[in-house]
Amino acid sequence: MLKYQEIAHELEKYIEDHKLQQGDKLPVLESLMAQFNVSKSTITKALDLLERKGVVFQVRGSGIFVRRHKRKGYISLLSNQGFQKEIEGFNLTSKVIELDVRKPTQEVAENLNIGPDADIYYVKRVRYIHGQALAFEESFYNKSIVTYLNKEIVSESIFNYISEGLGLKVGFSDMYLHVDKLNEEEAEYLGLKKGDPKLYLESVYHLTNGQPFDFSKLTYNYEQSQFFFQSNSHFF
Amino acid sequence: MLKYQEIAHELEKYIEDHKLQQGDKLPVLESLMAQFNVSKSTITKALDLLERKGVVFQVRGSGIFVRRHKRKGYISLLSNQGFQKEIEGFNLTSKVIELDVRKPTQEVAENLNIGPDADIYYVKRVRYIHGQALAFEESFYNKSIVTYLNKEIVSESIFNYISEGLGLKVGFSDMYLHVDKLNEEEAEYLGLKKGDPKLYLESVYHLTNGQPFDFSKLTYNYEQSQFFFQSNSHFF
DNA sequence: AAGTGGTCTAGACCACATC
DNA sequence: ATGTGGTCTAGACCACTTG
Image 1 (cartoon, rainbow over the protein chains, first blue to last red):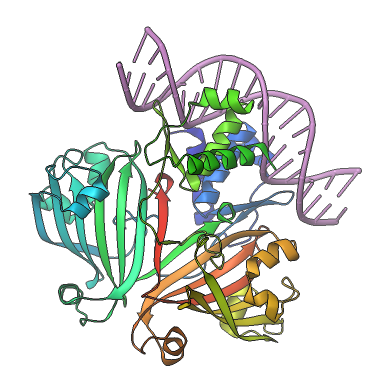
Image 2 (image 1 turned 180 degrees about the vertical axis):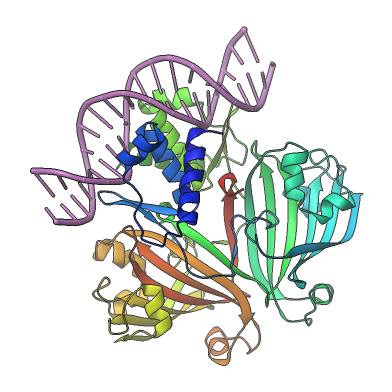
């Protein structure tokens, strides 16, 4: 593991373990340089990483401070990779409704950037949290990248399998979100009524080299799901 | 302006002006170093900034590529600062319903991290896009930071005034999102029916020094609003 | 004035992709 | 083997905050 990642991990762990709160001050750069025996820019890089993850904020001339939000029970929108990580400690399960190989619709082909004759894996699942239906999901995987899936894999964390099992490196994703009313099928799976609100999220996941490999459509149960995310000043 | 910001701007402008598409290759690092006459790490810093903004992605051993999404009409969730920027070219207006100074409720006091006796500005607005009601908004500003507001300021971009007019530096924000059904008041303002879906977003905006200065509650018209955002691998 | 984080450089060396 | 991006260093200098 790289030095700056190592340092970032250790600092994050330190913040967790010591239950530091928003605004708590971390040691100054010079101390950190000495403590980890690395150069200034390595520390800086570790801190930039933590800043992007929303763990700290740095104030020129003043110090490095812990960033924490108080609210519990929110799912992180951004670290959402089929959302196993951010719901640690939550009891999350899946039911596989369908799994097959098929040809893409035009919509799917466009989002995966493939031709109409390419093969895709189609996965349809319902995800449960504490036994309650959290989301209804349809996913489309480019089979020339995600070469193999079976029912067992698909009932666990697919992303885990993709990175660990297949050795693929996930890079970035584009996400499109809106709110609408549930149709009959969705309402059925989520145990709600047709016409009830839904949060609908489409995601396109890419490898680090930019190839899209997964196009997913998620419909969330509005009663079970609240989301959290953070924004930084470089967006302003 | 700093060198790496300057370079980032120029590159972004170049991508825009030449209408580069997803996957198009940018010049290699060495060319960029020569072109801008700066060191490698300055170029890297500029590119990292663009990567965070979702403008490019870098592939080790291969090159620097343009990142673009195709879909139009989506509002960026993350650069949302009262959302003037990302709806450029859209016709966005506001109607001010209320503006006054008052004491915070407990909820507001907690989110702004102030005592119950502090003064806050309360702003209630409806925001329109192309004349259609887009969102219903209630905002609470810590008056000891945002020292002055009036009806004129509040009918324009408040964030613009806060940075330009008051010289405050906006740092980061925490956002909480869920979906629910409209109540009577919200439905009225948005021209929808009670019980229709809503996207509800609470945001806490902080200065660069970590002080929260704005707590806002936004209720979006589900028919008018679709959102876009991006995630990077450091979240995986 | 002193403390603290941010920018920038020049260069060595490493890791991955491509041919 | 070559090209290309990523990490890391040591150090100079700058900009902001705090007392």
